[in-house]
Image 1 (cartoon, rainbow, N blue to C red):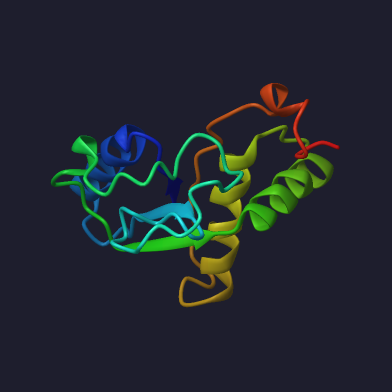
Image 2 (cartoon, rainbow, N blue to C red):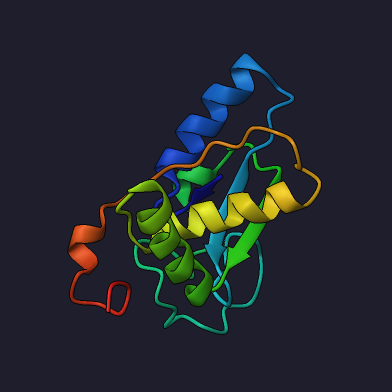
Length: 135
């Protein structure tokens, strides 16, 4: 599960995992209202999840990358999950890390219940100290 910016991390990891085991499922995470890679109309380009959701449907890194599904996460969901990570696990991540974990938790409550899900904690919370993430 990975929130895409340029798509490079997602594409590289997904390709490597699928080479090792084609049954592994790989999911792209995007902001709710800005899921261009999923083919949805962008209605909320001002979302608060920094590092992605750039309303660019044809990211070069995603060309030929395996995608088993797309998940959208709201800014509030990403924010609250990032705070939960800090409180519960001592992981000081940013908005996109919160989005990744929120999407993973959603999958675990659904058809991926009981499975192992890997996420990328792609940023530190340090650069968000002046935002509403930590206020």
